[in-house]
View 1: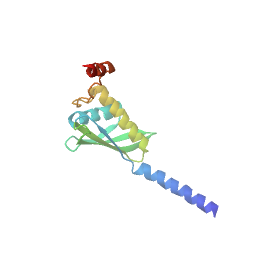
View 2: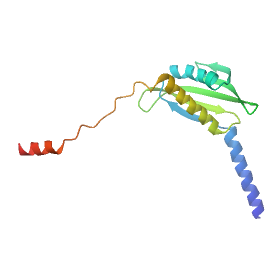
View 3: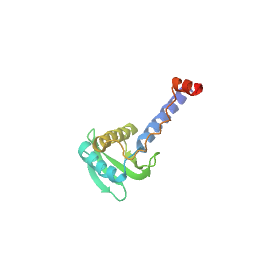
Length: 148
């Protein structure tokens, strides 16, 4: 009976592992406007990552590409959508899919792209000014007010 349970456990783990790579999708959000992100994404994929661009559509916000890894070709997509970030700025949502590759490869692609954006575009613009609390009164100011 224990052997049967062990085999079942191994099979369940294998199915979970296969399911993760087969339906992988990684999301991220960057605080840069779509009009800056899309062309940067195309350059990043083609030049920095060296993938083959199969199809791209700036109006719909996607790039389909082929990735060579270990002598095999894998299909991938890089989707970009217009959104607003938590500070109300124009931002872009990134969705990366690499068919039959683990999720950490998608996350690595997004992380490298984020670094590329900061290198090319600097820090996101139009950030609201920091809200600073009013300065605290010093003790000698409080003592002076009490004696007057």
